[in-house]
Length: 79
Figure 1 (cartoon, one colour):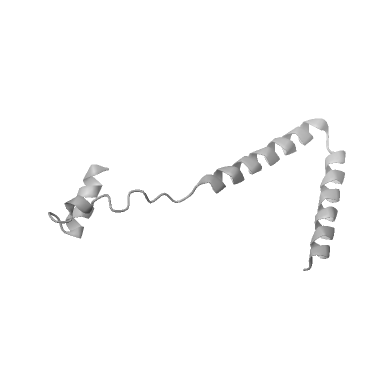
Figure 2 (tube, rainbow, N blue to C red):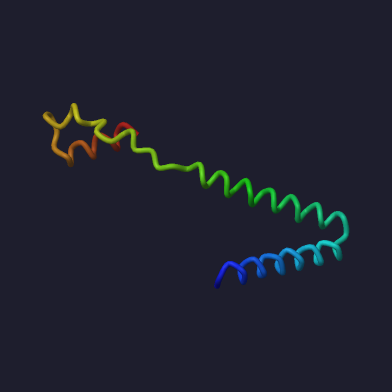
């Protein structure tokens, strides 16, 4: 699909949404608007979730005294 086809599809889609909205009573339009806002907020929240690995190497001080299996058991205790 080239850019022209995509833009045409978006325009048709938006026109279809507008036509449906015109047929709705005001209370349903408000519900649709609230749902759209909810979806946008969800998308923003999902974008903000960046994998944080600042814990990496946090058990470095213990590697002399414990095996990796012992460290795993300790980590479970510390939770």
